[in-house]
Length: 154
Length: 412
Ligand SMILES: Cc1ncc(COP(=O)(O)O)c(C=O)c1O
Image (cartoon, rainbow over all chains, first blue to last red; front, side, top):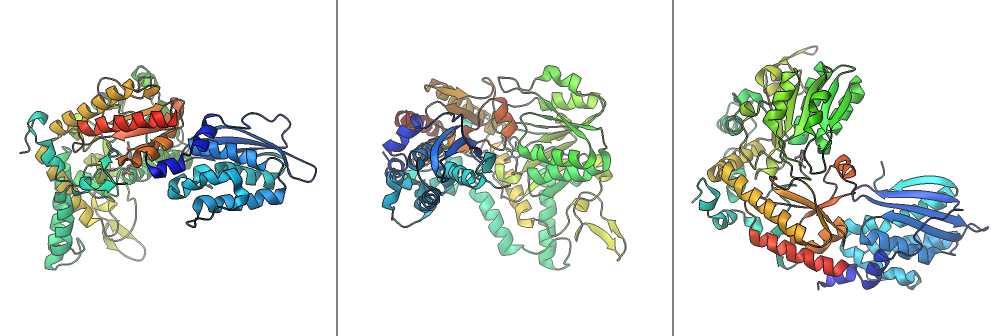
């Protein structure tokens, strides 16, 4: 098997894409974000419930798309549940750096998300990895109600 | 060596005419199955571009010096070559454009701007490439015209039973693709044009996927407009053509304004040249036109009937082999198809498949192929597409199947 493929599609990623965690509806969500990647047709519906201090009390998603976008969403929801607003934003930037930067650093705080680092070798797939994160960013910004976000701003 | 029937042609030698096919990708021999996006270029075309820049380059229709005369002659000769290639009555019916997209936009703006009124209808089909949809949406917005669509059946063919009820008196133009770039469907162009003409409707054919693959004669097809791109038929990028019947072209106002398209200009008023020069404002893509003519020479040496025979054999073989794979859905007609096959596999999303394949040197395309409404019609967000040209081989398709089998094992 080819090393770049093994690095991109690590077993953890394939597992999350086949059996995404936190997949489903969140009936009492405060905000619902529909994210899409029109270039690929990837879609995500991200539902978020906040705690009293604005942290992510619960987060779930539904969607369809490539293995990278689905696994990224699944891993992200696991990581972000229970995190404060600041932690989420910090994680967002660290994750973006992880999948785009040439440097080999993978900050410890990203934990399991570090399995996504193989994406950096595939510039065209960065948007797939970032879709769920764009949605959560939008959810924080919006706070309440429904929103849409796209990887291709109109 | 290049003769008429596909069986007598030395296709290996033909393949040798394409230097890029010796490239490697990720350490593997390149298997280029993305010719529907753009074809590769034979040495003859690359040499023609080089020869032009080394021996003939000058602006056209302007200078009176030697090089300008040479460049102008070569450019106008290229126009005659294109006219012959598609069976146009005269070179004056050929406008050089940047490609299919610009050709269709030219018709929508110049012809549509003059002849389309509120309440008129442009008839399209659900299988159109965005470049034969968006220009008409823009025209409809500007004029208050409406769009109407011939549906696509499950087997990827047009629902022709609906055609007569769709061709009502408000319809002014029927614009449709010759070969679908996602399904491979070959539409019955002559029949469609005849049906349109029978009720006084003009017909525009998007020949992007057909003009390099099968014989085309605009007078036999009976179309009023034909649009195509050079880069999908062994020519350079940035050059293509619009064919329009002389009478129609002459009735159309200019498209872009500028140099090259005028007879005389005062500060207040301009008189325009006649067609086709009226539609070619500014310095044209001279080298591109010459490269396109070289591509035509090259294709005609092999012969389009042989090319079609070879390519459709590859496409049929690929479609057959693909249906052997578990959880695979192949789109488009099963009998006759153009040189491509679109499919989806349960095991992996088109983007994962194409990323995977690329690591083995196999170039395919995954996505919506500028056919979003058609993808929606078939309930998918995208497909994987393998597309072929006469330089591809059965062995490459066998290799594609092996790689896809490996992908199924890897992703399931
Ligand atoms: C059927 C069809 N129409 C139009 C186009 C647009 O061609 P171009 O991008 O060369 O203008 C394409 C190619 O992408 C096509 O396949």
